[in-house]
Figure (cartoon, helix red, strand yellow):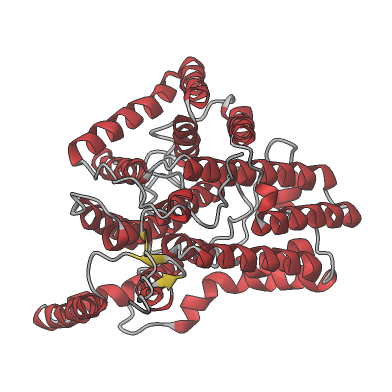
Length: 487
């Protein structure tokens, strides 16, 4: 009987083989695929008929192959978070956004059965299941919007299991999805640029595209900032570790995304991006070797550090020559557009003060078990909460976790995170670690990790992109032969 490979170490590496040579990033092909995705998204402009056609095509992709199914899941979430002026949402989107992950869940579960593998072999997934069971029990105990909490928990379980199952299937099949995710990022940039040209890039508060915060390709600036930060970090990992040709497309796309982030004035997202980039560099010293695995780099660490220092020096020099224009723009960015000449810490903290105080007050009322999974105490939530849609806004994930699941649930979720990070570190999966930590960091400004019915699910998919990329950023080191003794 053929042994089934474990998820923590790619099958090819366990057999002492290198992963298959990636086909490279072909800019023309990426552009054509991006235009095809945009055309598919624009089917929704035809109303209900267009939405039906859109999801029928995604359903056919789910049936075609695991790779096509994963692409369908990403396209579905891309449409979900897209600017409503680009992808109008009919009533069919409400059930369809739940059915698509469920279909992928079934598809990937059957694929895992064919491969004679189960996610329960991985300790991190067992820890995740334990958290979900505990969160469900605690939600029942609270007796506060129990049906809503349990339905949201079920959706979270289906979506995360579908994503982790899909990742495992693709890893066992040695499928390289890097070019696809670069295509998705290209779609984001093209839609963002088009929204500016068409005057629909600031329609969060004004459907006619007024002077509100920049949301560009997505439905809200609070979605664009975090997703753009994760995309920039992903591109940096492709550029630094990936075995690809034509990687020049990565800094071009990254520059566009950074500009979008500046327009959103999303400070937490910008800091999360810097954290992710710093971790990418720092982990090259920590996880360069793990047993027979070696992290490959396209440039040496001294050259990388010299490049970073050189860029910093050129930035300071440019700011000096321009009379402080760049530093003044940075101050305005931190102050959310205020014309103050220095950073006003009071205004910086004010935007999160009220939310944090409310979360803490709710946590103090029930510190052990919380108030329930993905529910809120606000009057707005009570008025709008239904079984199909119950939106909430919580800006700081650590306190939101404590508020919803209490100390007990938070302890189980922390165990899941530690187990997942350990699993990624075992296989020297630097992109996976960096994308996970960046995802957690952006949740400190916009709590969405459990909100898989919206851009939280898209964030999980970007983290999955990092996990998949990690397999193509390592090499197998052959052990040194022992010297012969005697003659």
